[in-house]
Image 1 (cartoon, rainbow, N blue to C red):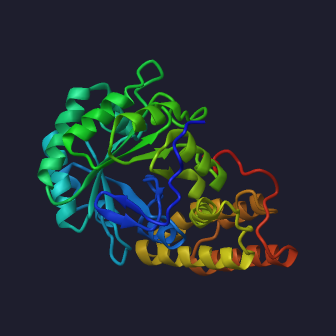
Image 2: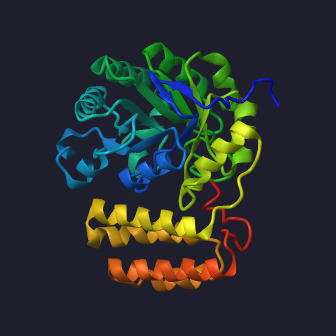
Length: 351
């Protein structure tokens, strides 16, 4: 373990904002829409970064892009992630989103998806450090009154872990904070995240460093903070179906004590409110379809959930979906007042 102390204070300075804590929701395509961001903030997250928005100005008018940029009623700070490979287009996207209410512009250089990397965006940009510098400088200059942050990976592959170089470029370009996922682009989400590179980056720059990757529990968050010296942690897939992980982690970092598992009745209420927000945000037809994956995450690992999910995925409307959720959690509550998993969480939830 390194000698860096974990940051466990009840507030954190980040890109000009005072946050309630140092816990961040990772941007996840198809997941971190406004209902999910609002829920995570309500349950303890300090910042929730939006799904990435394209830098292609031709798509600004699309329904999907308008939804992704919808922050009505959202708790500050509002952080919008943009993705692209052209400095001028990225600068234009930053201006557009800042004018539309974004209080922080986050640049995506961490996404490993082929459809993003094949156009030299996302983590593919890490192969071209000169282009990285041009993009960062263009975006920072385009929004002088809006802080810009950057998310990236440890490198392009394990032979080319150039996160320290990218971090230095970021700081020199005026980036206000960085988040690093502890895998390379080539790793995708396979294997285990490594934190040595994040610790190295933290020792090299003076701007806040947020550690990301495999943070699946309050204990793991504390370990990563201590090991890397990072200023905060970013939680992604482990929050899917478990948004209360932020409340649990906030409490553990502040007190050293673990909260008991949440009551089944509370989880039913959280899930129901989340579903109703999805129906309102997307409309009932699309909302029912999107709600299915969230219901699956809420129930993964619970007794009887496999059969429930198979049946639930066939339900066609809001009424039958909510009735099924009520019945499932009502049956669980009869067996135990607190949430209990059959075994350890499946790997896809623990990442």
